Image: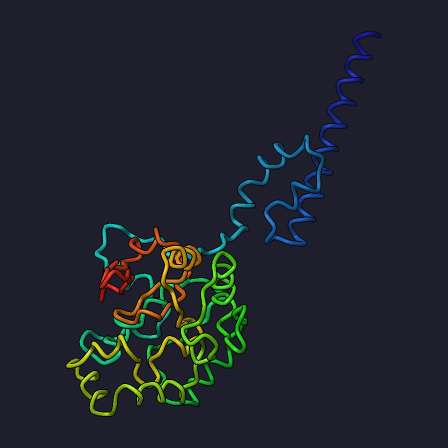
Length: 292
């Protein structure tokens, strides 16, 4: 009788275990079919003491179902040269990398720093030069803009404005002019107006031929300004504390000789060298320049 009781208890316990596993398996499969993209949902559907067991049963299935989220930040290969690392970082941002010696390459070298930004909320043009007001406006109409705090009408791409506002919350950083929206995002017409203030068609021809480049540190040719992208601003920065606040929030001087001009890169200072940028100090001013 005692032996019969042991057998009965054993088979009853075995049946309960089998039933529990089948029920758990069925529940898990149902949850997976409802949302195969959620790698944890089937674990949360069961009591904690079953998590390890279910992991072992379904780890193979989950590995096949879950697609890793692609990284938005490129991983630099430090075995490459600075130029190669920079070009690798911007290759998927531009429709075509300009050929060395062309006008577009000259513009990329002077103004292309922002193309390393892989934040999906940042919009970048697919080329370095807009041909006219229509093309510029079509791009600008796609942008999500944010207001720079403490200004009347200064707008940048929202991510860039938010980062600048964080820097301004740490320390006062005024616009170059003190109030004008021209320090911020500009229209194609404003870009042309600034160009004509400092240069002319003959100057443009010399720039296009590679005979004149220093002017690019004073004013951008029509259609080439970073201000058209909503990722640049002109500021009055005179202290180390201001510079550090800007750098810590992704803002850097990237245009050689253009002291008031700041570009939103979106990386901390210690990442710029890995991306190929070259730090150059001119007249006590630190610039992070493209290695082209």
